Length: 176
Image (cartoon, rainbow, N blue to C red; front, side, top):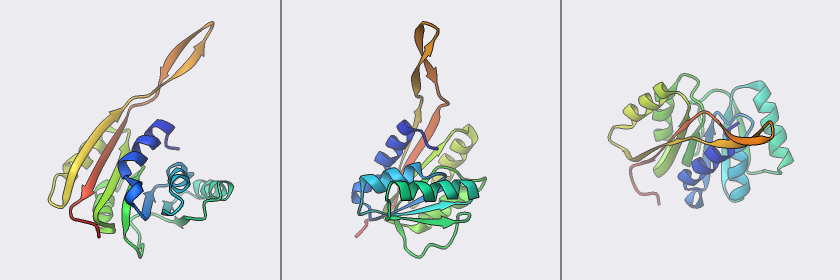
């Protein structure tokens, strides 16, 4: 599950206030899809997930939160999705990172947003190198380090979570 602080940053970077269709690649149990669907009830969300256990929980979560605007696509991206998107979130690449970046850029409308999160330095480097090309603009990269207040004996300390890299970029062009 995408942690709350990472999810909030990713959703902000997706600029969903100007989107009508979001694709969530590697939706897992649906934390990003559901948060987006709840914040933007007019947004159509396509959640792609391959893990059967995650798919079951994703569907349960969609029903629990009454998110009729989420369509679940079981399978592995890239896949055929008839309608282009205004925003794509990639929370996992399953070892097909550059292929998924290329697919995402083809699947986006002009000026569409792509946001990706990584914990591996190698994926960050691969993504940044692959995005350095014509047709991609405004590449922004942040490292997010979050710590949570935790009890230790009679005191408290901030227990760190793993750092997460967040890349946001935009497909060149003007969306009409």
